[in-house]
Amino acid sequence: MKPVTRMKIGISSNALKHSGGLERYAMDLVRGFVAAGVKPAFFARRFDRSLPETSMVDAYRINVSFLPGKLRDGWFSRRLRAARRAAGVDVLIGCNRVDSSDIAICGGTHLGFLRATGKRRTRSDERQIALERRQYEHAKLIVAHSQLMRDELLELYGIADSKIEVLYPPVDDARFAPVSLAERAALRRKFGFADHEVVLLFPSSSHERKGLPLIEAALRELDASIVLAVAGRPPERTDARVRYIGYAKNIEDCYRAADFTILASTYEPFGLVGIESVMCGTPVIFPTTLGCCAAIAPHAKHEFAPGDVADLRATIGRAATRGDRAVEPVEPVEPVEPVEPGEPVEPVEPGESAAAAAFAASSMSTPAELARGAVRYDARVASHVDALLRAAQRIVESR
Image 1 (cartoon, rainbow, N blue to C red):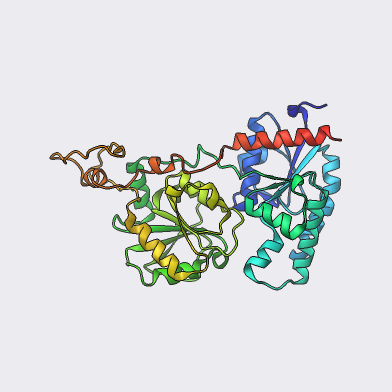
Image 2 (cartoon, rainbow, N blue to C red):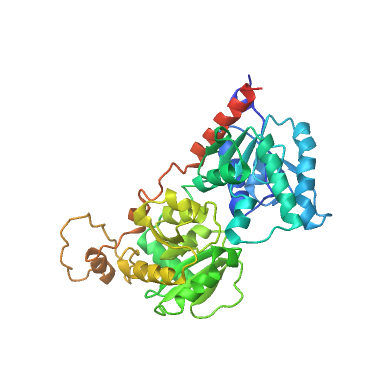
């Protein structure tokens, strides 16, 4: 039997590049496997050669650019069968729809998406669903990224429960971590956020699906100091309340500068942005249906009924006034020591900053305090990769 470090692991993804969702997850896997002493083979349609991760893998490009978009998934899947054999892959981890993966990563299902959005099936949908079914049928193990995904696999695809393992996706805890209040204040200035503004960060590349219309409607009757900062794809329109801050490769700085991260998605199988946000010390405002809500501690989240504009408006209003926003230091910036629960508040001495006084007199928390215990699972990349390696070892041993 091959030891883990001698086992040839393959990863399949649509691309190896800066992105969200499963492409971002695949990049995390690359770094995690390399740190564990395993150099994976990586199969993708596109590679960003400027990324350090590209040099960490044995890269195999499967060209689909000559095909219409609706036929590309099927072609990629067929070509991958031969490509993995040629690369000598022992265990293939499929982060996209492919029917030759040994470990299928389920970060969302097409049937679940159609049910949640109420959309009618098209011929293209039928092709995607058929490929999904083949992937789940042929895989030895399906890794569901949330309990919601497990439930959809059982209910909509008839998968045996014994074939499914729920593993929440990992997050780079060195990258997504709180900064000091002074650093946070500098980031707010960088993004143009005023001290008095309550900033709701909306990270999205699919605005309608992520609920931008509902959020805009909720904001209309709220105080003008509550503003929305869109990161990702530009919105159709911007104004004083809805601002575009660009496509941010350093999304962690956006989280750190904002007061809350907000989504109103109709379908969000997990929602990794929620975990990233609270790890940076920024609470979230999410519908109860988001898969990640179960993995976020109560003190770090504000939940509302999905699709309910009145409840969303009320939730934003409560969150903005409840007192769990981090305090911005004012010039001159002075260090602020956290106040322990129940500890008496000392009077403000001459020369103390107004921010220090405000912090001491309120229940507001620092980002570091909010981040502490905010995630209810071990989100380290190393732990996640270790679980996948153990699964790969079991698969090889069962042959």
